[in-house]
Amino acid sequence: MNCPKTRDQFADYLMGDLDEAAREDVQSHISVCPACRKEIETLSAVWTRLGVLRIEQPTEALRARFYSMLESYKDGIREESRPVERPLGTRSSRLWKAARDFTTFKRPAFAMTFSFALLIAGIGIGYFLSSGGSEQRISDLHREVQDMRQMVAVSLMSQRSASDRLKGVSWTAGLANPGEETLQALLDALDSDPNVNVRLAAVDALYLYRKNPLVRRKVTDSLSVQTSPLVQIALVDFLVGLREQRAAEALKRLVQDEKLNPEVKKRAEQGLERLI
Amino acid sequence: MAPSDNELMEDVRDGRVEKLAILFERYQVVLYNFFLRLTAKPNVSEDLVQEVFIRILKYRAGYLGQSRFVVWMFQIARNVHIDHLRKQKAELPLDAQFEETPAQEPLPDEILESEQNAALIRKALDQLPWRKKEVLVLCRFENLKLREIAELRGCQVGTVKAQIHRALIDLGRIYLELQEGRTT
Image 1 (cartoon, chains in turn orange, green):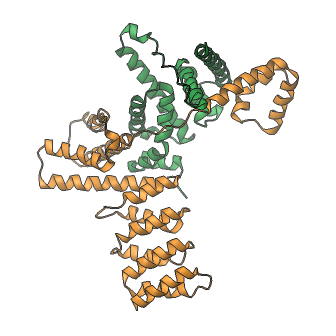
Image 2 (image 1 turned 90 degrees about the vertical axis):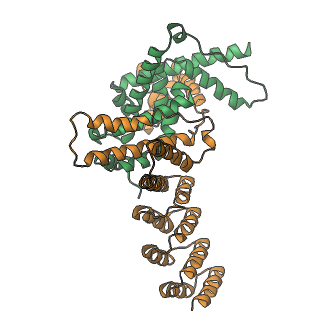
Image 3 (image 1 turned 180 degrees about the vertical axis):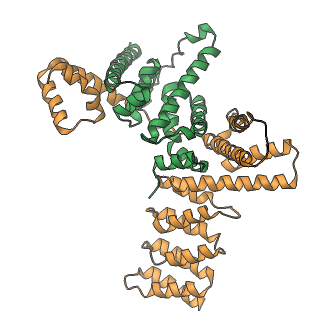
């Protein structure tokens, strides 16, 4: 390979995009050509130096602004889909005005210390009070904050990072009426999240919604698929709290498992005594 | 299995706009760092990330899903940045546009060497013209393939390779100049 051809491959070489053969071609050329060797050494040094730049985190205010914008956009869509006659030309401008209003919202200097929910509630309450509050409006606001909370929770629970998923599970706490999607996300986390801490957090979060028949049934079924003793113990406590026949049957099946951890077995037997 | 970016964006396009929240959670940090490396301003970078998601909603109907979602997203991010530069230029008085960024205080010796290197490379990156800075950020930090960068910049792969080459040479030169300035 000659010099121009080799140099043409340098970007691919640095990015690791060359296959074995092409990489060997570049290496064999630079072993005999001092000029190309010097050049790739210079480029590699800069390339490596760039690696010292750390990944920075944005503030929580960015998340707050995004969800506010998304909510107002959704509201805009809802409003547009209503069968009301409106002069042409105002539709998209209304939608975008609503969304863009939030881009001009500047976060306060101490925004980092604000909790997300407080911020959202603040924006919402400000908006509603300034436009003449009523009970209906306050209840609409409450519903919107709840919707937004669910949206944040569900999207966090689908993230790759376990700490994000954990954050997502904790976001579901305090929802008066979690939607089906939120409950399903929690149940999925309980059954299949690879991280024990997320599964444990999901048990705690689901306990708040133990009156829901779907939650009762799915959590009972989940006992047979869990393998971590920590999660099993948390589920045993959950099922004892349900005080129903189906839960007792699940516990009986569990104690019959010969491979069961002795601590879990003890806890399940104690639980059964309380249930029967 | 978690839905792919493209599937989520197709959902957003088809009206399930709440799915954008998942894409936001996946990419807010990526985009924030992209803008931070280009502008070196945290507040501005957050504003620009927000603007990207607004435009994603605005142009969602035009999403075709032919290439990876990130390529389309960075195309939007790039336009957002270019618009920001234009706006900034229009707003700044003429003398301020040519004003040099104030030199940073000399770094105290006790700061770890890696911190010093990071500060120096950041400063060198800041001094690079934005087009060169952009191509470097895209290939070094955003894990985009050369053909994807070519696609989003609307040029040939060969051109991108040459741009990366030149940008690295220039960055290395600026870095050395800064380093010499610091030691003398």
